[in-house]
Image (tube, rainbow, N blue to C red; front, side, top):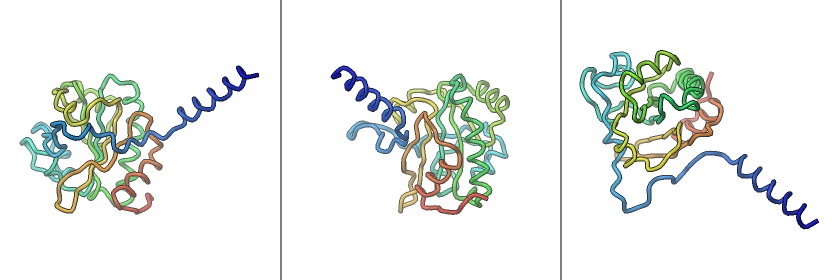
Length: 198
């Protein structure tokens, strides 16, 4: 009898664990460590004119995140060989369209960085999976290690501007990503934008 109760209790604990939301607030590295700011990440000069126009930056030169013209940024951290990242493209594309249809595309920008990937690998990934938003290569893995610490792909960072206009991390969604409609609600409310998608 005791053994049976133990197994039932273990099953309940496991079920609760597997059903937990994967919203990872306060997953930033421990205080006191010399981690870099998201604002210091550079976008490559090789971004297309369409990408530059969408992000509100000058084409043909390296640009810091802080120069992106938006109130909020959704940054997906992925790897082109990650199976979950490949599967997630369709959902991220739908999120992009939801933001656009809600009239928020000037306030919320989306982009992705392929960690430890080359520009060629990211280009192939973008074309193969028809990625709707800007993606670029992040070959310097150590840079993102300093910013993010240990993460699992795909990893979605929601960034917003503070009262001084500086980028700060609002929250993150890791690995087990919700459906696009739920993600849109979480992101728009987290950024203080409550328009409903059409």
